[in-house]
Amino acid sequence: MDMGNQHPSIKRLQEIQKEVKEFESQVVAFSGLSSDRAYKKLERTLTKQLFEIDSVDAEGRGDVQQARKRAAQETEKLLKELEQNANHPQRLEIESIFNEAQALVEQEITAFYKGGNCVTEEFEEGLQDIIFRLTQVKTGGKISLRKARYRTLTKICAVQEIISRCTKQQPSLPLSSDAHPSVSKINSVIGDVNKAKGTLIAVLMGVNNNETCRHLSCVLTGLIADLDALDVCGHPEIRNYRKEVVEEINRLQKYLDLEEEADSTYAYDLAQNGSIIKIEEIRNNMKEVKGSLLKIEKASDLYLKSKTELQGLIAQLDEISPGNNPCIREARRRAVIEVQTLITYTDLKEALLKQQTFVEQTETETDVSSQRAIWNILGNVAQIQQEVLSFDGNRTDKNYMRLEELLTKQLLALDAIDPRDEHSKVSRKQAVKLAQNILYYLDMKTDEWEY
Image (cartoon, rainbow, N blue to C red; front, side, top):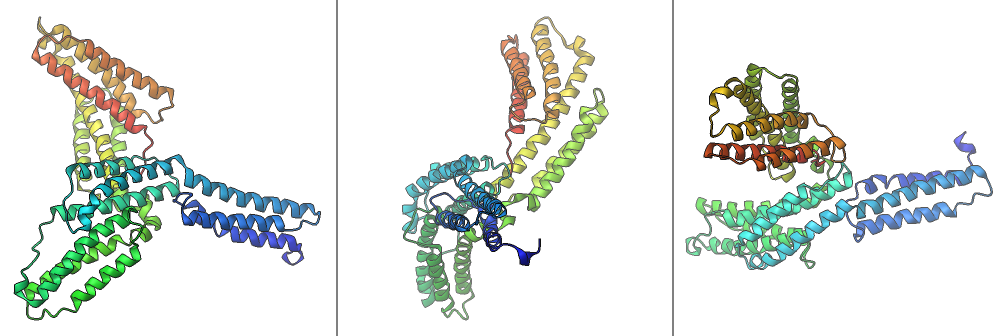
């Protein structure tokens, strides 16, 4: 149909749809809560568009009525998605964990407000536990959840970093005020900077409603201006002293840009991260080795070659720096476990082959029954481990439950063995640990974690 001959009501509906479309990306990426100002603004805007659509007069025309219905459905869909993003169970879980972090910080913040830098070991451990739990929150690839998790992690990791620098740094400060008139002013600024750290932590964690990032940025900028105004010509040691303080202030200012950074796709979409790309390349190489291993039954030379390759992959993973990102650290940890599980599999297969060769010579009257029972179970464990390595499903699959049950039965069988000597005790303990590790690997493989 010629655009110029369209009915005015349809034209108006198309204009509204175009306006609604402009808010789609904001809705999809919305990572806040229903109590946030941004949520209410988006909700109000989309609701207004619904009223606009409803006010369009169809004049009894079927085509206008259909167009109005479609426009209303599209807008209602966005409103529903906005509500779902804000109230998603995982989003609420992220907020609940963040609230725990806030409570933890509030208990320790007083010392920082006073310019101190002493925190308890319990606080540091509590913060680390919260970071780990956040990395385990499932996002299902949903943009809003990835963004919410990244923003929350970034704030808490920033706090952890600030505190770590305060407690572990051994600066060459302060100099004596007698060294130069400017030193007294620099020392005064240092005191203000230390107090600013407490304020920054409170702002990042949302436990100080009387302060804003903008105002704190102005305060820090003012401190730099005060330092720049000092005359330290001809005194390199004092100039270096001032430089240290300026660098510390600049580090604090970088933390104030976290909110803006969290809105950038490259920040929360770790699939674009260089370290993650390297980890995935290593995992792909590991899968090729695994494919070769699972196709053979008896080939000790190939086991040796595969083990060497796998140990090389471990070395490559060790070289990858996760930086301050706990999700990258977790991705690397999981990759290491995957490779180590394959190494354990090759070790077990080699041990079973050797055992078959000289089992008759190693048996004695005192340990034959318990040792033989342990080796029989290890043979079963090796077969199950091969299936676990090949398994590519989730925890709702019947095969997952079957593998879990088989491993549990092997653990019970090991528990029922009565070791008659120290060697048998050690062997049984190692076998139990192996079966438990395979069970842990199966759980990790199916927990649907993603970066």
